[in-house]
Length: 427
Ligand SMILES: *Cc1c(COP(=O)(O)O)cnc(C)c1O
Image 1: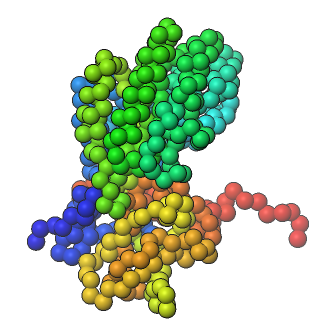
Image 2: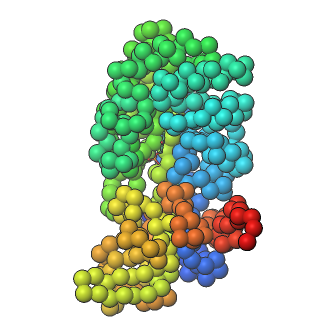
Image 3: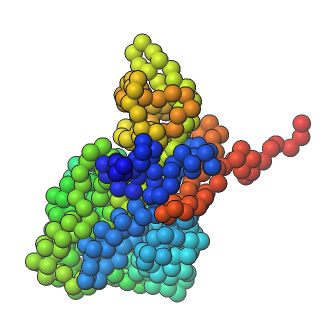
């Protein structure tokens, strides 16, 4: 029997009615490691990366994985070994890159609120570039660099003010949000940066939002960025690299985002036409490299039929899968054993004591207590956003490569959750 592919998930498929990741049966992994369990396909990660690599073939380009999407060490290792750099947003992420074997010079440091201590550590290690998000940050970074006797390579994150048509919480390139420097302030900010003793202007940077599913906002943003490169260089400040951020969407629910290679083909057509084709390009993809490479396997604990709604209560919750509660996000639900007999409409919810603790709404499912379900598209912004709310340990994680699997994170125990706490003295 031919394996049945799940749309948007080429490395997860049904074989004789059972859901597989690459060559392994997910039921076997769940039995071995328990649930909830995150499972990642290495082949899916590398295939997503390859689409970008094809888009940049023959160009000077660097792909910096935006690791906040999923910062588990083994995933970072996979990308480091495949030649990626990393886009980090905290000192903690910096230490993770080093722990996973990434090189400091392949790191770019984004984020609106870098502390002096974070800057100092990054300068001492010699990271590749600071993506600076405000004029005040330029001054502080220069001061910290001078005190260390270093020069900080900077790019300024500019706000191209294009609407990526995405959820308001994950749109970042419009005027009214906290990220970046306004387009019309950018030239002045570059002149300011060029005059500071601790800084060296290296490039320009933008990131317009997340889960972008159309090429138009990218094409518009690229034109606006190239306008700025021209304006800044007219002042005698050389822009060595153009960092175009991340944000490319994935298929959660039949979305059809452009493929990374097709998108970059379209972008390079514009870039070449304007004579910038020989610059160095950097990108910071997060979700599109890992989102559909991971799932979360969860067990059905109870079915609770009701007058208005039927609830399917599972052992994964908002602390494991925060996206529905945070953004009303959609995750497809796929049973580990296919079947549609006796299907009913359910809201899939977790055990956490919050009405916001739901994972999927109004889904036709043929389920019984004890069945296993896969929450699809759970590779990005799930484990990296997981919490210990309700003193729930974070789930275990497994990475699959063909017929092999590795436990890459053990399930957290209650003792681990309490380890850093201290009781009061006395009785
Ligand atoms: C979050 C973020 C990214 C990655 O965004 P995705 O939508 O996951 O690709 C890239 N760059 C910056 C600065 C970010 O904040």
